[in-house]
Image (cartoon, rainbow, N blue to C red; front, side, top):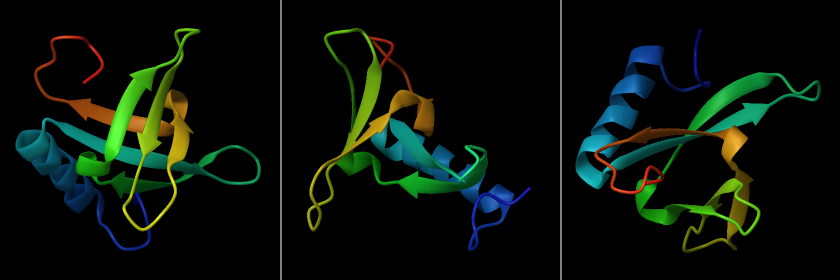
Length: 90
């Protein structure tokens, strides 16, 4: 119903689409509660988010914000809105 505490659904969807248009990719982290159910969607900055596939073929996203250490997110915890892609990942 509402992606997070500060955004209406239409604002969230427009934000991801604008990021996709400007950077080629829009990302959002799917937060989960203690029971493992989705509890919120937090937009991620595309300029600091890098998808990659590890040696076992699993998709991950590395969030590398300048003020923080790198954070590795599993592909199942990220919504990725892609622009045109030549590799199917970015």
